[in-house]
Image 1 (cartoon, rainbow over the protein chains, first blue to last red):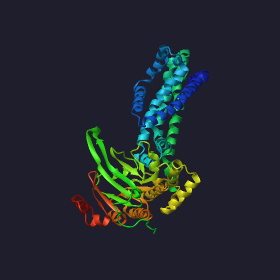
Image 2 (cartoon, each protein chain N blue to C red):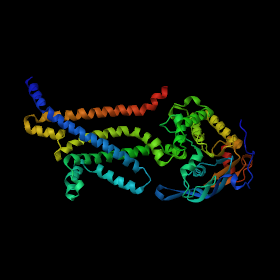
Image 3 (tube, chains in turn red, yellow):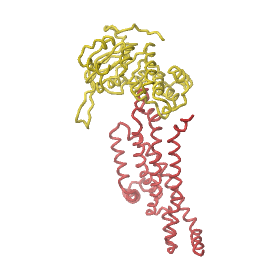
Image 4 (cartoon, rainbow over the protein chains, first blue to last red):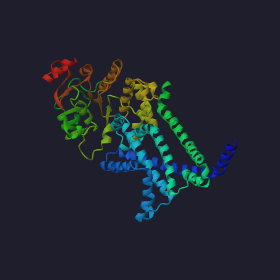
Amino acid sequence: MEWFAQKWQVVESLAPFLLHGLWMTFQVSMIAIILGSLLGAILGVMKTLDSRALRLCIDAYMHFFRGTPYLVQLYLIYFVLPSLGIAWLQFDSYTAAIVSLTLYTASYVTAIVASAIDAVPRGQEEAARACGMTKAQRLYHIIVPQALRLTVPPMASVYVIVIKSTAVLSVIGLSELTRQGETSILRMPQDTMFIYALIAGLYFLYCYPVLRFARWAERRVGSSAAAQENA
Amino acid sequence: MAVNNNEPGPRPEQGGADQRMVVIDCISRRFSIDGGKTVVTALDDVSNYIDRGEVVVIIGPSGSGKSTLLRTLNGLESIDEGNIVIDGVDLADKKTNMNTLRADVGMVFQHFNLFENKTCLENIVLPQVVVLKKNREKAERVARDLLERVGIPDRENNYPRQLSGGQQQRVAIARALAMKPKMMLFDEATSALDPETVNGVLSLMKELAYDGMTMAVVTHEMGFAREVADRVIFMDGGRVIEEGSPGRFFDAPESDRAKKFLEQIL
C-alpha cells in the first residue's frame, strides 16, 4: 500500500512534466507525418513518371534516408549543416527535428506510394489512356485513388516507427517525452525503472490508437466495394 | 436490325482516299526482351487499310502480332518504322495530340479494364466529362441510354467487380461508344468470357457492325468472322500472310500457313 502511495506521488509530481513531453512528441511527430506524407506522396507519384533522371534522383534520396540510421541523419542536419555557413540551414533544435523527421518519413512514404502505383493493374492505365485521358487525368481519377487503398497498412507501420523515432530527438535537447523522462530521472534516481515504465506506457498510449485506427481504415477502404455487393 | 449503310461483301480495292478510315504504311514494331539481349519483331513491314464502315477481322495464332497491330491504331503501342494515318490524322506527326486521337478511337479489351474505383455509370460518365468536357447531366443521360442499349440498365450503381464478365464487357463497350468514336477496336473481347455470355457480347458487336461502325476486331470466334467481317486478315510472325473476304478465306485459303491454322481450329 505504501509502495502505491509513493509511486502515486511520483506520478503526481511528474505528470505535468511528462505530459508536456508527450505533447511535444505528439506535435513533432504529427507535423512530420503530415508533411512527410505529402512530400512522400508527391515524390512517389513522380518516381513512377517516365523521366529516368527524376527517378534516379528520387532513388538516391530514398536509399540515403532509408539506408542510414535516423540518429546519424539528425546529427548531420543539426550539427553538420550549420557548419556550412549557409544562413537558412542554421536550424534550432525544433526545426532540425521537424526537417529531419519529415525527410525520414517521406523517404518511406515515397517507397510505399510508388510501389502501390505500380501494383495497380496495367489494364487500368491502358483503358484510361484508350479513352483519351492525359497522364495527369489518369493519375488523378484512376490510378492514385486505387493505389491509395493499398497504402493504408504499410503507412500505419511507418507512422508508428516515426512516432517512436522521436525518442532520438532527446539527443539534440528537444524536450520531448524521452528527454523529459531522463530529466526526471536525474531528479528522482531511485525511481529510474518506474519512470522508464511510465514513459513506455505513454508512448504505447499514443501508438496503439494509431495502429487500431489503421486496422479500422484498412477494413473500411478494403471493403467499401464489397459492402455494396449485397445491395 | 439496323440497316447496313455499306454494300455487303468486300470493298473495291481502288477505293478513293477519303473512303479510307485507316491507312497503315509499312509499319514495324520490335520489342527487346531479357534486358535487350533478344529482339522480337512483333510487326514486320505491315501495310493495310480499313475503309469507313468496314469490319476487318484480324486472326492468327498467338504471338502473330495481331493484338500489337490493333494496339498501334490508337497509339497504345508505338511503332518503330512506317506510318499510320487515321481519318487524315498522321500518328507519326509530332504535332498530333494522341489523346485527342484516342478519344476518337474506341477500344474494348480482353479483360474489360473497367475502372475498378468507379461505378458502371461513372465508368461511362467520367471519360465524357474529363476528355470531352461534357456537362455531367448530359453525360449521365448518354450513359443511361447506352446501358439500356447494351442490355444492363439496372446495374448503373454497381461496381465492376460485382458484375459478371459479360456484363462488364457490355459496360466497357458502352464506355467506348459514349465517346462517339469514329471507329472501334476489339482486342479479343470475348476470350475471357464464360461460354454462355460470349454470344450476347458477339451479337452486340454484330449490331454495331450493322449500324455501320468501322471496326477492327481481333478474335478467335471464326463464326463471327465469317458472318460479320467484310474482310479477314490472317497474320503470322508479324506479317500479313493472307487477306480477303471471309467466304474466300475460310473456304479456299491460299497459303499453307492459313490452311494449317484453319485445320487446327475449325
